[in-house]
Image (spheres, rainbow, N blue to C red):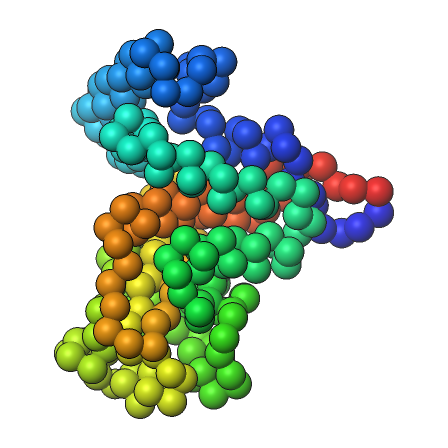
Length: 251
């Protein structure tokens, strides 16, 4: 039996649809679908308010994130379908060693990037560690082997728990110390999206890089933020182990 766990189709469905469980059997984009989405959003926002009042702030944040996920489907169903299509490419992957490169590939395609990397947060040291990358050489990988500062875009995204876009690293004061390695590595613009679990805790960062001054379109950035939440939960499931995540180990 292999040591890595395989994510089954049922688990991927749970990961993607858990916030929208009441609407799983409704035809997407129909009137009934939109009504149920509206009811789901109201339910989650009311639940968040109640949980905050009772001091359960972690669960309240999770409810608010679910509400935002529903709002995403209501406001831009095409983008939501594109996000779902990205998750389909993770089906059948064995272990994070296979899944994370696929996840990075999907993000780079979405954001039209030729270079990118995915880091996970070491829970012991608090450092971001590159676990998969595309387009970079040894100099870049050695320089960013462990990131703990908020000057780098990835560190800033992790520290602020927010997506960070630097359209031109040569004019961003906070990135000044890293400009030489950026020039040597062939990028001038970068975006970093935190990968967060259901409670909003950062478990990693996914970054894409561009050779010239650039800012990805807002629609794609919004999709990337939701994809970051999906990937964060996926990583958390693996760290907890196959049993708690509902994963099955292949023969």
